[in-house]
Image (cartoon, rainbow, N blue to C red; front, side, top):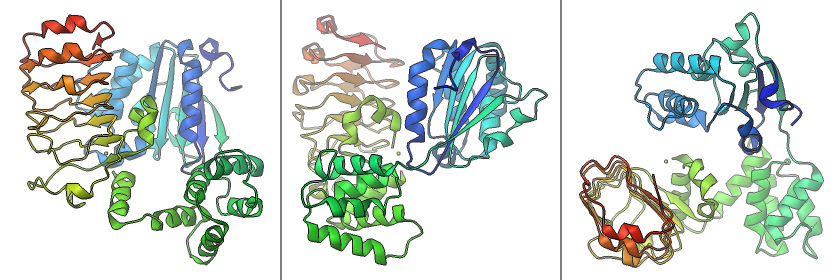
Length: 419
């Protein structure tokens, strides 16, 4: 907070590097600072998870660049396909506008150069970089300028013993203190986590319903296994404790692929139970991504992402009765399902970039709050029953080029805002 003192009124350009091990909550701290002070600047942008985006994408930096450029130009769509051109445009804006920029999850100084350029910033601008490597920021081109920015480093270390105990107990016992008869075991558990928040949460949750004997057995396993760090031991034990191979496969899909943290930021409920699976490549409607038949698919899901789903409709066998959010963008759907389903809890339905010709069944979605149909370019008809969705808050039908007429019942939606 002292680093941000004066905000955009400062006459210097300053960079803050927040560094520390993975899972230590660097992003959380950066978001807190960003939200608290973003109103003080002319332009703002938070580019999240850069390391993963650059690793997963063919054009690496282009999408993070387009997000940053769109934010600081205040444009929704950036039609640019050249990294160097994007960098040039970003440099021009940053040089003339006081800006707060967060580059989250940087693992290479070249990413900083491509995203914010080498020209410098308008005085009063602030840049926050989160990274696992404390030396990355100072290797970027900005520090080779005649007048380099002022640079502050902030190391995020593990939690203190008292903080660790409180966090662990919250997840293990539902309170801030050990349950009677478990104090010794709780203190023992802390040494395996090294103050690491994620490890404390995972270990606490995995032991929450177990007896003392199970706790002792778990500690013995942590002692005997040969891993590089205590944190790895904790996470490995939790993985091994999953009840079936199907659960382990699902865990690996979630840990290794399509997870959108921005969605979780906006919809914390999805963090409870949410499955994200890779693109659908199997023509057999009775299987799903090599995980087995639909009958083995978890029936307690609250959130489900099926980006790139290639069937023309959602199989009725897929258990969806408890879904709160369903994301099916870039799918081959031409209709939602052949046999309409009643999904009483569903609040969010994202069908953007799908091949839908018509959408309906709204009478069976009584809780729907967000309907996203962005760039459904084949869409020609929206059922008139949409007017029955009294809870609808967001209706996004941008760039639905073939949709010429809207249902008259839309006038009944008193709470909705169109995007």
